[in-house]
Image 1: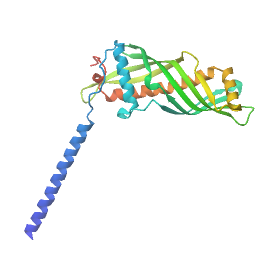
Image 2: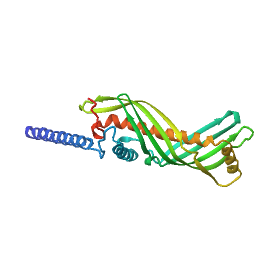
Image 3: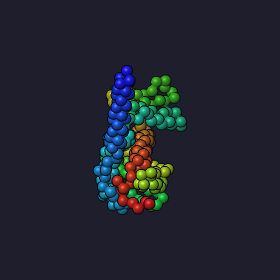
Image 4: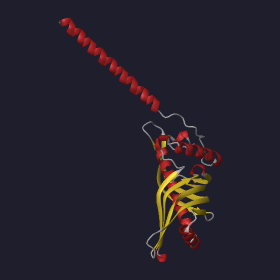
Length: 250
């Protein structure tokens, strides 16, 4: 009886020992797998615009692939954009908006100092969505499918930043408050479908108020640029600056 009990206790100890070691190996392996690998960035200087453009292209592709949980920007789905014209007793509503082309946004210029950064982008965007126009004198809205091209829309982004050393002794960039200004180089082009009495009425309303298209395109571009800024804010606090930038921060 005593021998049987001893065998039982020894067997239990061995099982627990093996399980503990297996768990320890699993944790070590998981930690090794989640350790951040070197990124395919050129480490650019602040005044090397061509290098920064290559780095931006890499960042956009990483962003669009969902790296580190960043949000996709191309294509981007927006719920709705609305514009109200009280003096005209009219309102525009664009729903189920699909925007493509942001992945190929171009870096035009950049300035850097110890407190604020600014970047200037040009983008060509393709937009599709369901457009409805409401008039006070009409019970039912005019409805059509809108396809719109936004060419060479300019975005100026300024943001505050600071540097901080992490627990791993690496330097990280913390992005502060940002400001985004959008300007259209030219009025967006569009067409409506299907051809109907509704699409004709909407086309006439837009022709009378061409600023409507510029307002819609500005709102769409702002949404995309704000997502890009938030992605970079998230990326910069997780990835050491040495992986993508040459700065003496600390």
